[in-house]
Image (cartoon, rainbow, N blue to C red; front, side, top):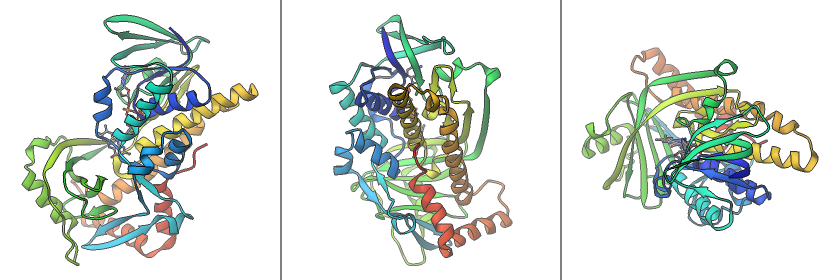
Length: 391
Ligand SMILES: Cc1cc2nc3c(=O)[nH]c(=O)nc-3n(C[C@H](O)[C@H](O)[C@H](O)COP(=O)(O)OP(=O)(O)OC[C@H]3O[C@@H](n4cnc5c(N)ncnc54)[C@H](O)[C@@H]3O)c2cc1C
């Protein structure tokens, strides 16, 4: 098998890249180790930045998103039983975000790829990327019980944090930066209309809580829990009670309860792998970096990387200049580090560390008060949340 761009992984990064390349007339093959329904059902991110929304629309993949997604013009910060709304369009010159689940983005892109695009092979596990520093890199993979080789001009590793592509870069040429956090998120999906029409980020002495949603009838809620927590340790009643404590306000706001349909625990990690390119192998999305979910950046960063790659390849084809492809790693890493900073700031402002002192609590409240009282501070949050520019 031979193609121009071999794409490892059919998460949001790999699927969108295949779509962007198809629209530019560049052929690709996508290899995905899991089956289609697994990829379509995997519950993860749900907030699309303005830039991501614009890219999906321009790629002809925004029709259902525009019909079913929920445009959000702000978030609410909750602390000390008080509420403060951050108004995105007013602070950023009109930018907003869209609530549309990662599962739905993947379903839309898979349907388009199977209808119009190049091959997308499910249950095709990449075993190794070889010859990254040659003119003809290859992906060795297993599909339907047979080992095969995909010969490529370029390979893009979109295979997530646990994938194989990153391993093809010699350890001596790489640097990694990592921070783990002593807490995790217990996330639930519940069949109940969201109790607030925008996301609520709550800082509480008992720990952080987030109210989010998947649709007008499905709520997504999270609780900060100790690292290593087993979701089954928490009964449904305990979860609702704890959410009620953490979201409580002085003005009598009420949290609506409903049947919990899914429970899971997400660890919190910050991670950056440098460089994001070695020869003709490029890393994109979670394969190269992880952010804690507090800033809602993971999926959006994955989109940014593949947009940068696709634009650079089109530039090479149109002008003969590899300048933008050569700058891929630096261009992406500039954006990645801004997202790392933003996600870290949001995480440390809102979560209570197990060893937090009264001084730490005072600082968190001062940071929140600053956002509530200063247009400059609120603008900084709004700009970070709605997203950094795509190059
Ligand atoms: C539990 C969880 C919850 C999250 N919640 C949020 C959130 O609320 N907000 C947010 O912004 N972000 C969240 N994220 C992060 C966000 O979902 C990711 O940043 C996003 O999925 C990155 O997309 P990706 O395409 O780079 O990687 P992935 O979505 O991880 O896709 C990688 C794909 O590669 C495939 N693959 C792996 N190895 C191979 C192989 N050897 N061969 C072939 N295919 C392979 C995998 O099966 C997968 O389909 C969450 C992540 C997790 C794990």
